[in-house]
Image 1 (spheres, helix red, strand yellow):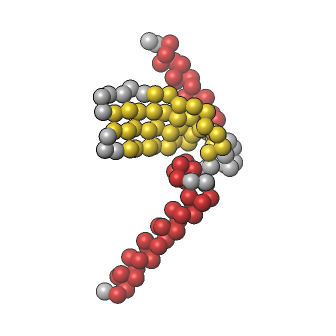
Image 2: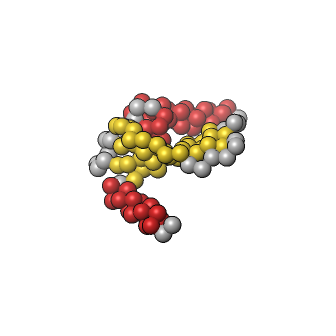
Image 3: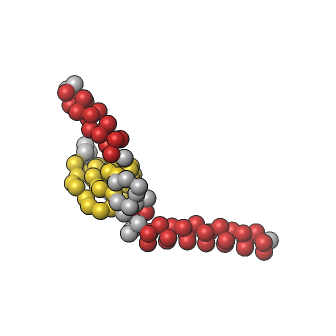
Length: 108
């Protein structure tokens, strides 16, 4: 029984240590979630919102990778919750997304 609790404590300590390391290395919670520090925030676009929900997309430039990347931060808020989904894109992937968005706009 004692070895089981020691194993559980060791696993919890490793997970906590890893999270703290990423938090310090990448300069905060958002950087840790992207896996790279945020160099600069470019802007944000408001998405569809209902009476009780609000959604936003923020665009960041990420640093300290082999190549610079673009970070998209999708945020959904309600009265009782907050959800943030980070997506990191390489330069090529970001250009492809721009092309897809432009095609969608042209098709309207």
